[in-house]
Length: 434
Image (tube, rainbow, N blue to C red; front, side):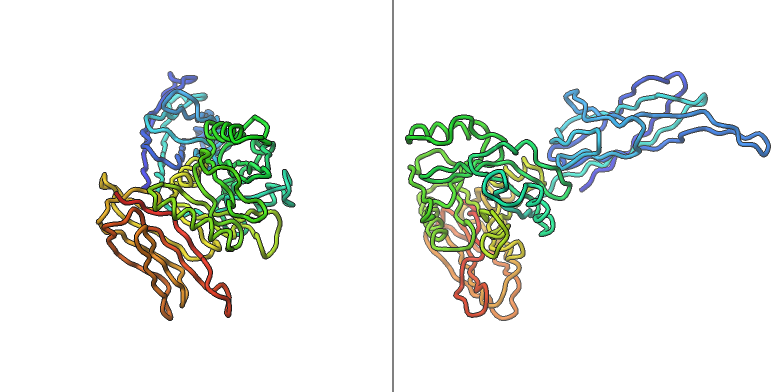
């Protein structure tokens, strides 16, 4: 729920040219802060039928963060400003909003003889869990794609996507120059491209500074370690692609696995099977899906498949945290079926994809956007249950216990077109049980 704070300040003439601090509180996990203020800009008088020019009144605005750093300043040019990691008013930082006591800095530039009353309204909007859709594997003209980053972003915006991760081959040259848009988040990345396999290093402008053409397992391990130390989310891409299979050791330090690359195919099914074996061994490993987009076309179109993430906001930090956590699923289209889990963590908190939940307690399963004939598979390390959507079905609500399972994940199979055999249309990350 949004928090509204009303602040009032009276400035008399003696405080002209002073800077006055007005404190207000910001909670953890805040998505945006908006500030509006108003005051009479002049005080006119009247002499009979004549209006006498009034005294000027000018109150400047600046904002200071809890650690003393300035969030920005607008002088007296605007009566309202917004601060958010997703984009702020001109003159203000676009940054994460730390918890603590913030201050409005009221600059008493011109004060009339009788003083002035200034009213401030601060609106603090908290983050809240919701679904964001995008693509984790996009190439541009910085490598072998045919669209510039801004052209790919325009296409994504027209599609209603929330984020793109750019992954040009062995190239980070443009990662600090992406344009900013209010309605989509652009995230830097690199696809480490080697004749013995590809990997996505996501979320950092420069994952590695050493040569990409490693000559040994030891050199490759060092490069992966460097990428991790630089904050990259390290994903092994299309490991069973017949053209560029993963020929390195799977013991390399990596954080996730791309199990769905482009259109659903045998290579993706092999990746999903390998991943399932890892889960059954007790490993917690998040998965991703990406189009490997290079150019418009029926195959490999943008967000086919679509990475769907549950995150508290669309900021880079929150989306990358969700990706690393495995907080979401992959759908064959942005308009494809949607899924969610709801369980309880050992700490009594809500748990869903990528989280640890209490074994034996109920897990609520929600699927929307269903079609007649969809096959829903509930998969654990010990069993798989299949449900078929009947005629007219549009959603599934199910509550189950899995007392002996290490995890629960879900797959949905659908016939993409009349006459075609069912193919995977959705795959979720697991909820883990303990």
